[in-house]
Amino acid sequence: MLRHVFFAGFSLTLSAALTYYVNSSFLESIVGETRVGLVYALGAVLAILLILLIPRLGRRYGLLRPTRWFALIFFSGTATLALNQTKMVQLLAFTITHAAIICLALLLDIYLETLSSDKHTGRIRGGYLTVVNTAVLISPYISSLTLSHTNALYDYRIIYSLSFLVTIPLLYQVFWLLTDRSLPPDVFNFRQKLRDKNLQKILALDFLLNLFYFFMVIYLPLHLIHTIGFTWENIGLIFTIMLLPFVLIEYLLGWLADRKFGEKEILTIGLIITAVFTLPIAFITTRSIAIWALILFGTRVGASAIESMKETYLFKKVTAADIGIISLSRLMIPSAYLVGSLVSVVFFLFFPISYLFLLIGVLFIFSLYFSLTLEDTK
Image 1 (cartoon, rainbow, N blue to C red):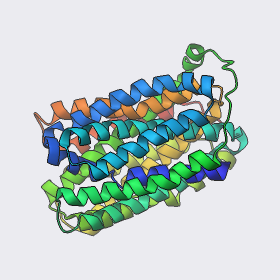
Image 2: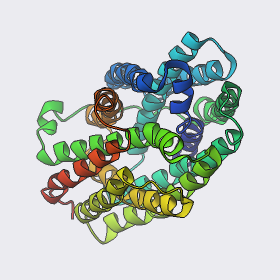
Image 3: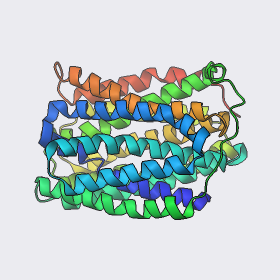
C-alpha cells in the first residue's frame, strides 16, 4: 500500500509539474501578465472550499471514494486543457484542475499518515518527498524542450497533452491498486489542538514556504524571460539544477530528524539559507547560466530543508484522526496562492517584478522567530 501511495504521488506530481513553470506564460497569453495572479486566486478560493469539505467526505465515505472523485476531476481538467482551444473553457479547466491537484495531494497525505508511525515519520515523509520531487526535477527539462523554439499556444497544448497522458497511471493506481482506509474517530478537539503554539508556528512556516513557491513558480520564469532575457531552453537547464536538492537531501534530512536531531535546528538553517540566496535575485542582471543555477540551487537547499522538517514535525504531532489539522495544513497552499495573488497585483503597481524576491527574502529573515521559539521533538 505504501508503494502504491508513493507511485500515485509521483504520477500526480509529474502530471502537475509538467505545467508548473509554463502555466504563468500560458495564462499570460490569455489574460495578460497583470491578471495571471487573479486566475490563481480563483483556483485558490475553489481549493479552500473543497479542502474544507474533505474531512466530512473522509469521515462519511472513507478515503478511497473521494480520492477517485478528485482523480476523475483532475483527469477531465487536463483533458480539457489539452484538447479545447476556447479561452474561457481553458480558464475554467485550469481553475478546477489547480484545485483538484491540491485536494488529491491532501488525500494522499492522509493515506500516508494512516500507514505511518511516529518512529519512522521522518524517513517515510522524507522518502515520499524524494519520490514526488523526482517528478518535479525532471519536469522543467521536458517542458523547456517543448517550448524551446517558440511560445506559440500550440506548444502549450503539447505540454498539457503530456500532463494528460500521465494522469492515466494515476487513475490505474487509484481505481485498481489503492484500497480503502477508514479514518479513526476524532478523539481530540480540533480547536483545542489548534491552540498548540508549536502547531501554529509550523503552520505559519508552512504558509510562508508555499508563498515562496507561489512567487517562484509563477513569477520567476516571467522574470528570467522578460527581465534577464533567457530562453526556455536556458530555463529548463537552470531549473533542473535548481531542483536537485529536493531529490538529494530530503530523505537524509528526514533520517537525521528521526535519529540524530530534532527538526528545530534544520528548520532554522533552512530559513537562513533560503533568505541568503533569495535576496540577491532582486539585483542580479547577468545572463550567466552558471550563476543563476548556483543562486537558485541555494534557494532550494534551504527550501528542501524547510519542507522536509515542517512535514516531519507536523506529522509527529498529529495522527490520521486529526484530519481537520492535516486539512488545515494543506489549506496553507491555496491560502498562500490567494494572498500571493492579491499581494502581487498591488505590488506591481509600485515596484518591478525583481523586487518581489527582495520581499520574500526579508520575510524569511523575520520568520526565524517561529523556528527559534519552536519546541523541538527531540
